[in-house]
Image 1 (cartoon, rainbow, N blue to C red):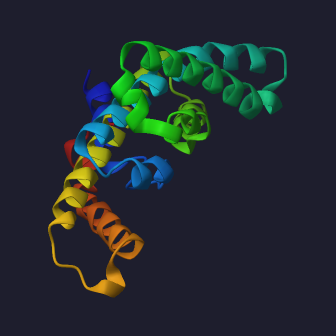
Image 2: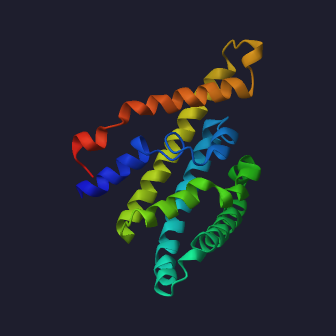
Length: 196
């Protein structure tokens, strides 16, 4: 149990896919203008991470069994694309406002390197199915936390007096780097607690 708690804490704080590994930056910068949209995207990515881990882990066993591991990336991208299409259809039917607010970033989740990166890192790390699922949950919650935190920062920036030369993308990138630096304070927490 301690091991699984360590995996979740790592995914959320110390090995955050967006803030530590710099995976999934496109939706991080593009959909983080409003907190509700950022939370919706974070929840959708978490769901895709869990589904893609659950489906790709057994498929990878088959690929390795038949000596076709070289097809791993191609097969995983196709599987993730199918899952994202299912989620897009469900959001369009049941959550129209979230579907509209996510816009082009929802289909781009297919190529979100955080999703593909999590799936491949789970396999390269040699995680069992249960550990891979827990790691995917931690990665998704970390993505959600980063999105919501950054959306809060960007909301505050709208009412701040920013010099003209920093407005737009420059202040967004400076803010993103400061949010990323804030997570450095958690480095060493896993080793210190001896969770993993």
